[in-house]
Length: 172
Image (cartoon, rainbow, N blue to C red):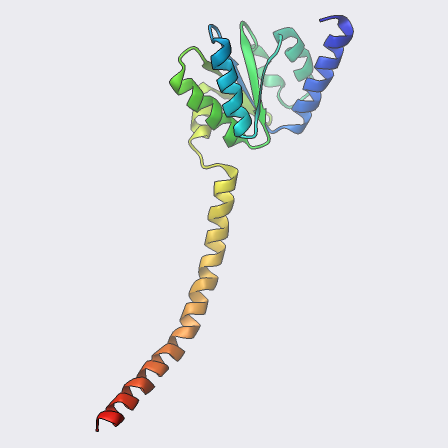
């Protein structure tokens, strides 16, 4: 990379850090190309990004952002994963790390809060943002459904009573 390419890379990475909410730092020592490709595919499917970056350039891009607390983690062969949905990126990386022991979680940052590897794993156990939204909609719609069934129940009971009287009247 020449100097202008490095400046462009730092600017693009800084723009990413300005727009995202979660960054996960991993050590990818010894991962094969096929394994990294599979990891990228899984991370992309979760709506996140995964990039191997030079530590010095990543540190320069982190400077002045809310994620500058993860700069000490950038030593050795590291890679960054980021996403708007913090749970999605954490789940994708943690699930891959379970099946491939050469990918090691170093930590990450959720906004300005720096997390260690255990914090990333705990975040991965939470339901995704879409699942939480679905649960919230379910909680909101349940009372409305119950109100509708309660208001319709007396009318249904009245109809059954009239039906029973009609049947007894016919039998007599």
